[in-house]
Image (cartoon, one colour):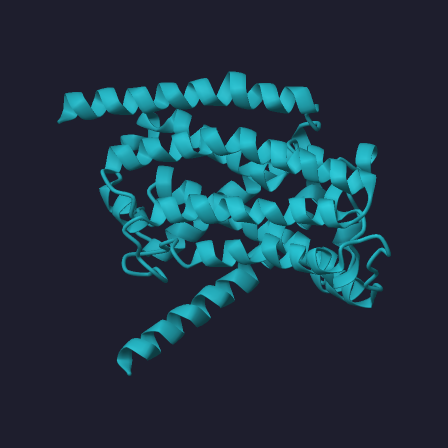
Length: 317
């Protein structure tokens, strides 16, 4: 009975985090972009500092008509938002937020996370293929190309940390972390973070949904709640990538004075701010620039980081 209760409490906690933190990230993006780009609209809804902007967005999505194009594959079209969203909920179950505070502690947690995150991108590919729209198909193809290009540097950067810690367990990696890993694994941290943003199709890596070229790419034919689910998946992905970066490269819950979970939240939302900062600061990359960054830039750097980790491990051992 105690085991069932413990599992139920962990499940409720994971779902609560999954429902709350992405919304907080979305509200934060509204406010940060409003200040950085002088966007006045998000600062007025509800009065003080536009506190009701998120509520207004929710009401807007609920009121919109849910239309499925006549030429669409209706089953795949309907499943795509769930395929994009649910993997991030599953990943959150294995991300530790404090000592012993993890939904499921898997011995191969890092391998599990990388495998499941790749499934989330399939939602965008499904949406593009099933919409019966040439712009959506092009966006889906771009999503597939980005997944193939940026999965390799993402995995190589994560492998470097796993090699350093000697384990694939995420809590084990945090427990093995030392402060001098910050400079030692700095290259891998940047690679992992950028590759994660590229897989999420966040600006400046948003070629699959380049609205000035292909309308909204794979999301062109979506409206109402289905479109909102894709947006929720994007913000859940931001939280997951930020949390994994904090766990693998920034020591997770380690920090002075404050409790471990508080430090974890501080690190996650500091990285969320960087995600928003990159969006408002850099123009969208061209498709050739995006591919060149992956294969000419990030992959060689990831291999260098992996070799450096091996050398340090041998010398230290």
